[in-house]
Length: 126
View 1 (cartoon, helix red, strand yellow):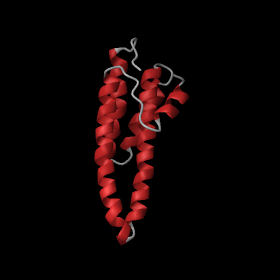
View 2 (cartoon, rainbow, N blue to C red):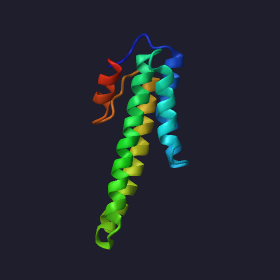
View 3 (cartoon, rainbow, N blue to C red):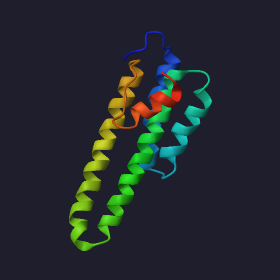
């Protein structure tokens, strides 16, 4: 699933599309704005960068849905015992997954996130 004709600039921006999503750990909207801006800038220039940026955005939106479910479960005391550890594990797992995706993107690979990768691939057309 590698791309042989990807430039260094494309690899850098594909990596940044994943890593800048980590701004969500610091500022809430950063996880969505950075990948969206990169996608909008590169959607007509590079399918490689657009693919990585779009799936990074989709992954962050999927995490938002899971976090909302965990928050709703945490409202009750009984389910909070499940929801809080689940949210912690999800956060650490997402962090590791994002770092792996960034490294693979910098290596010029078309790394696909589970569930959202195929959707991004269809939209970008690769």
